Amino acid sequence: MVEEKRLIAELERQVPKTLASARNQSIGVAGRVTYRITRSGFTITPTERELVVSTQLDGAIDVCKPLGPFCPGYGSCSPRWNVEVTIPTVFDEDLSLRARSDVSVSSGCVLRPVGYNATPELQRITD
Image (tube, rainbow, N blue to C red; front, side, top):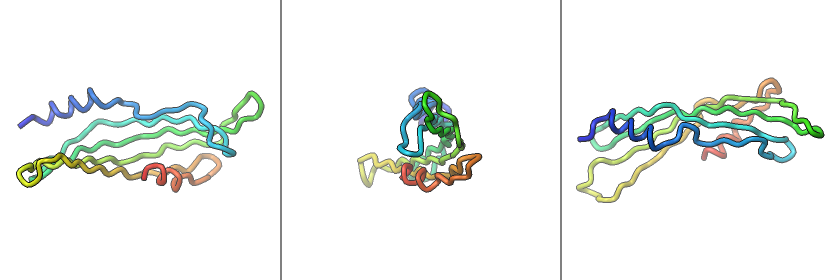
């Protein structure tokens, strides 16, 4: 059996720390968004029939409204997601590898200081 530390080291090597980012991306009439989504470290939880790999994603989102050559910011938030990937380890019943993933918003996005709740949009994108 491959040891857990070795699996985690390989995941850390293969999966980039920054998973998504954009700068001054148009979001229609709302203005422009700059964001960065990074992952934390991995944990591995073995069970009798599967291996569960978990991590947390942290976001930094800033929104601005263009006014001529300027884009004054009017809101920011720091959402979080929980990620779990479940990999079966019993292959005698089914030889195919059928990993399942679950990504859920654990902390939403209410743009500060304006108070606009962007969590439903974030949930839609996550789904």
